[in-house]
Length: 193
Image 1 (cartoon, one colour):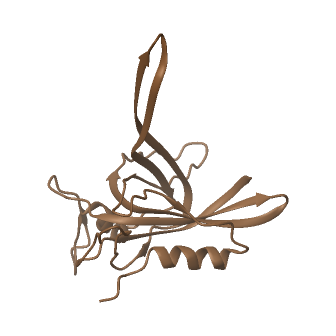
Image 2: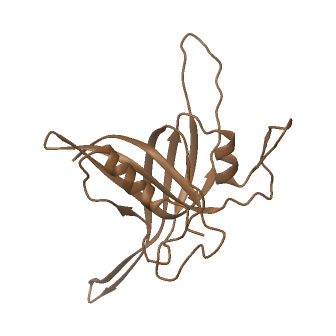
C-alpha cells in the first residue's frame, strides 16, 4: 500500500444531549469541514510494563493510552478555530477571534479520507477518531524575502478511548472517493433530535 493523498477532514462537537452513550461511539452535533487538508499524522502512545523472572522477560503488557493527531490545513478559518478551541468569535461589527485563558475546547469526533494505491489501482479509505479534543499550536509568520513561502493552520488533537472501547476506526478499502466521503459523513453526523 502506498498512501498518495488525504482530504475532506470533518469534525463535529459532541451532542448537547446524550453525548456518550453506553458501549457506543459518541453522538455529535453539527459537523464542520476543517479546511483543505494538507497533512494528518497520528502517533499513538501506550502504557507498557514488563516483569522479569528466572533471568528472562516473563510478562509484558502494552495498553493504549492516547493518540496525538497533528493536522495541517491550508487555512483554519476563525469560525472553525472558535468551534474546535472553545474561543470566542465576535458578532456584528466585532468580528475578532478572542482566545481566553479560561477557554475550554469541546470534545468531538474527527474523520477524513486517504487515497492509496494498491497494485496500481486507486483505493480510498475513511479514517475516524470517535473522541478527540483540540489544542492550539504555535503560529509562525515570516516576511516575504527572495521567495514566497506558503503555510497553513496547524491543530493538534488528542484521541482517546470512547465508550465503545475504540479510539480509531478505519474503513475497508473503498472503490471511489464518493464512497469514502459517504463513510466519513455517516461517522461524523449530527444526532437525530
